[in-house]
Amino acid sequence: MQHFDLTQLQWNSSIREQLLGQGLARLPHAMLLVGPPGVGKTAFSEQLATLLLCESITAEMTACGNCQACRWLDAGNHPDFRRVAPDGDDEAEEGVNEKAKKRGPGTIRIDQIRELESFVFVGSHRHGNRVVLVTEAEAMNGAAANSLLKILEEPPTNVYFILVSSRTKSLLPTIRSRCRVIAFGPPDAAAAAAWLASAGLEKQAERYLNLAGGAPMRVAQWKAQGQLAPLDAVVDSLLAPPSDPIALAARWDGLLKGDGQFRMEHLVEEVQRWLFDLAQERMTGVVRYHGGWPRPIGVQNLNPTSLLAAWREINQFRRSARHPLNQLLFLENLAAHFLRALRPATS
Ligand SMILES: [Zn+2]
Image 1 (cartoon, protein in one colour):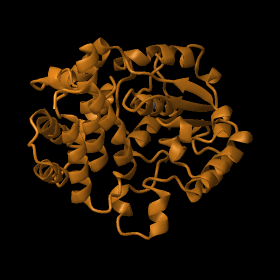
Image 2 (cartoon, rainbow, N blue to C red):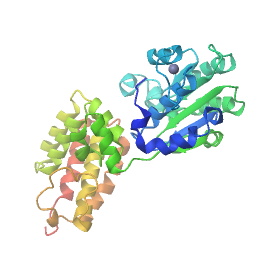
Image 3 (tube, rainbow, N blue to C red):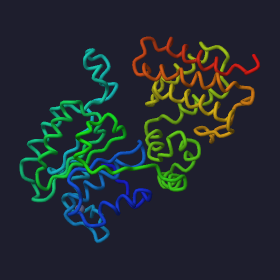
Image 4 (cartoon, rainbow, N blue to C red):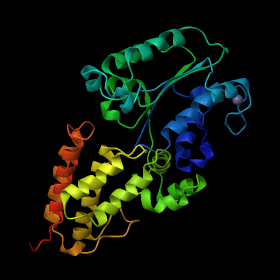
């Protein structure tokens, strides 16, 4: 488990107080942590799990970090803890059959939930609590969600379910209604910058925080996944694009072939946000996402109607960005839409 000190996540302290203020005994047995990505839900859920299993909780209501339970959790082998996460990622899905592809990347399957049944209905190894942590709970397919629902309907004693989701719309409503829903939001700018500074990312804060929707841990994740350099390169390509869509597409194609996890869907999203900012800047003078970058010359000559039209049209690219039939053709088409939107209002 990654260990973030909960006390560093200041913006979550009211949630902590609300949940733990009356002691662990009053904690609900099924909790659903919701909110945008990168605001500390998973870190919080892991801390909560550790707290429920620690055998020597401190006076400040934190896990001791030294007991057998804490050591097992650190090593990832506590017998009374189960973590359920989507199986496989995009890469693992490459080359498998069409049916599996349609299922989409990262699904929580029914056999992963069935394995929980023997875990939750058999007694605890340590005569204490047992904890099931389900991250990206929305990734449960229908069968898996129904199977979990059955367990939640007859909750075994001393078993805690912590579900985490950034996309609750995809979550079965009956699952949601079985859980205490705990909503997380992004911190204010000062707290976010302070967290990034504590993670050694103070330089990144100004540039990327707005792009990350104000979610500091998302910036840290982008850094860890090697997404920041390609992101910078995309912004450079948008700031002073070549006039030829084929040349622009070739530049993007090169970026997508890099080592990091910067993918087509990130590129499409970034182009869309850039257009959004240009339109907003032209109409209101406000730059929502790219305030930390240099602004292009001649924004005042752009046509906001064309910018917004292109911004809308690019939605269709978002839908097929994960599996374009022909990557280069897809990029050329995207580049053509982008460049067309930049034609000055007077022409
Ligand atoms: Zn402990």
